[in-house]
Length: 385
Image 1 (cartoon, rainbow, N blue to C red):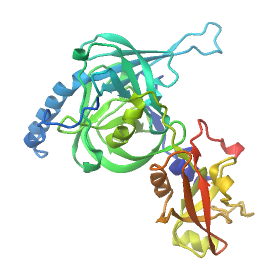
Image 2: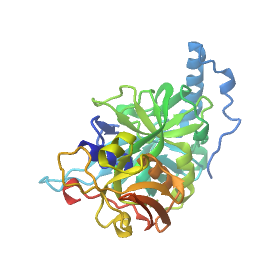
Image 3: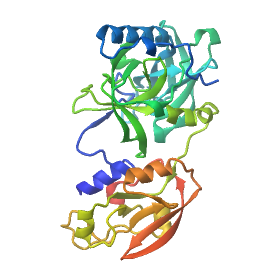
Image 4: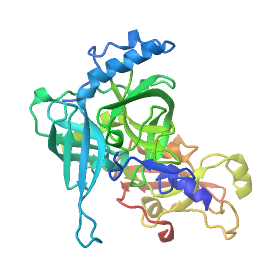
């Protein structure tokens, strides 16, 4: 049913909705440095002056491009072939310190048997995966080169971003190395799905043209600071139509020390699909509350199932939304109105943590204690739920 697909995309991303989301994936020829006075560009930028915009883009490109790399990943050959041939894909990345650490998307390097990094001067070196965060589509790879060959890019504060501000993307679209595009931030606080089905929250939406191969490259502000990691586009065709998404730099900053230390980041899992409860839906279902998250489905074996949470079980299969589901109104006393609220709250938790859900069931309010588990590598498919 359509509502199940929408709910799953919002909470754990099992479905994408009607629009085709193109991950800029491998098969498509697609010490932290903080913001500093090294990039004093904003004062010269006049958004109303096209020549000023061009000069800022040029200045940012000249300063940042040496720190941007192209990444070529080699995957094992398909077992279905008589003579297995390795598959290659391309993406982008950027240097974050002089120890050889490079940030990219997890989907660019995941499962690679070999990685090669191409610097802006054309030199090529091998690399290895150090840490991965599939749930945020982030990864750190490392190269063994002298520090003087590395040009780390500074990380900015993505909490300061404003819709409409200038942004610049540098990367490797369609295997065209050292390419730069620019645009504006066209939206903030977006929620998209990682390849493992987890929702990535607070993503940056931009109209800067990004295409297959830009994955993992930096999205920079007018000061040359990295404010996002390019991750996805949404398009009915294989190319940019002006809607791209980047993982915010503050998400990267939060996990970067652990990624550089060699960790794989585990995120907490609740295990439900749901949708925002509106007054109209509450009336349709005969509920006594008019806001919260209506639980449509509870995944088998999930923490939610273990805690006794109930999904919809109405006998009327013709109904757009079956009846019988619990309504989550609060988590640890914090009011929630949408599945995005739940995802955002759980972002601050870890596997093994305990949360308390306030639930309305059959007109009665009750409290359920949930012990969060680690997000699974693969979510059950529709016919397994």
